[in-house]
Each structure stands twice: as C-alpha cells, then as structure tokens.
Length: 221
Image (cartoon, rainbow, N blue to C red; front, side, top):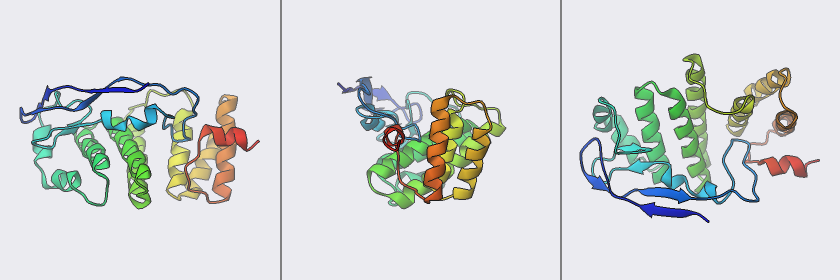
C-alpha cells in the first residue's frame, strides 16, 4: 500500500509555509521496471512526492526547506519563471525541470540528470511525447557532463550503460544507441544486462522509440 501525507514546511528561499506531500510507504510487488529504470507500480505513481514546490515563490526541490545561497537568484530569474509556467510541459514536469536548472547552477549535474528524467516520465504519463523527448535529451546531456566531472550515479555496474542506451533510443538517436550497445557488449556485464543490450539492439533495428520494460524481454524469448 502507498501512503502519502502532507506536512507543513517552511521554504528556505522566501520563508513561506507550504504543505507538500511526503511518501510514508509504498511497494513494487509483482512488477518489473522499465528499461530506463522507472520502477513499477505502486511506486511509479509517487513521482509527485519526489519534488516539492513553494506555493509563494515557486522554489522547486526535493526538500524546499533546504537551499544553497545562490538558489534565490536563480528562482527569481526570468528563465526559471518561464520554465515554472511553461505550458508545453505538465506542471509536475516543470517542477522537476526547474530543480534540474537549480542543480545545474550548483554544478550538481547528476541530480539535474535524474530530475530531467523524472520530468520525462511525467510527460510520458500525459502523452506529451515531444516534451518527454526534450527532457530525455537534457538528461543525456547532464549524465554525460556528470560523468566528465566525476559525478557518478549510485547504480549497479552496467546499469548506467543500459539507461543511456534507452535514452538515446527513446529520442530516436539510433546510431548513438547502437554504439553504446556494442561497447556495452564488450564489457564483462552480468547476463541479465547482456540480455537487455541484445533486446535493445532488436528495438534499435526496428527504430522502436516506445517504452519497454524488463518483462518485455522475458516475453520476447
């Protein structure tokens, strides 16, 4: 069972009190994650608790009760305000993209990448596929910059390769996706990761940009 509760918190930027949602418990029983690591239900429906928004100033962050010194200037910037209210994206996606902007300004690129990916998931849920592609392209850019700055995602070995391949494939960048697949298959990855790479190669050959999960691999055999 998923349990969500609202609690009052004070915004670290403007001092206003908001009541964002907090996740108390959830589960992923009986499901398989998507190839881009999105978890199965019931956890996949809890994206709304991964980001908070101040009702007054619009500060968006995993915890709006915390901030760094320069975030206030970013929140007040025209670029941030434009993203916060961008009609081309669902509201929740805008919140994740706003935090990605803040994280980038703080040179916390790996956080910006994951926030961009979560924005893509929100867009997927609203059938906003053009917007989701924009978010995924931003996630790709941020993951690459993060790696160049020695900021590594805390995921099992090989999982990052699988994620990047799916991001390239979902955005129609099939040459890049195939190149990452081929390089991944040269590594000594666990068998289940190799199976994912071989499945991705099949999808790339078909120029398939749809969402697929681990269960699709099992069903394809």
